[in-house]
Image (cartoon, rainbow, N blue to C red; front, side, top):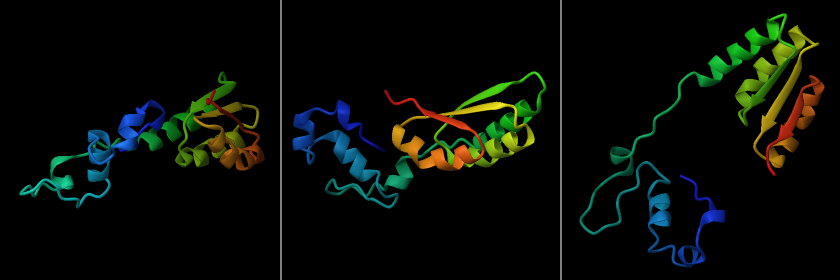
Amino acid sequence: MRIDEKHQDNACEQRKNICPVHILQKFLQKKTTICKNSGCNTEHSKVFYRREQKMVDTMMTCDIITYSAEEDVTSLYIVSDDIDLFPGIAISKVKNNSIDINLLVRTHKTKQAYQQILSTYNINIKSLEL
């Protein structure tokens, strides 16, 4: 769990030891964490579970490759910070160099990290950060 510090009140930040948000974050840091309440043996991994999206990257990669092979598709816009999609994006560009591929990422920092490798394949990258 991450805390969006932009939306956090200063009073909460200054009193982390009694703030439920910070207490929950600390409890969730490790799956083996045991509750700090006296007499409570609740373990994090036994009371919280995480739903995972399975094969979403694979399905998106298949869509990217499939759409890029269509004759009437001239451009693709992909919104993702996930580097797992890059091989599919690169293959799509290699197979159809005339297609305009645009990757939109969340932050300028992410854009800077990936811009050089994507420019090798002539893939545009833009950050959504305002």
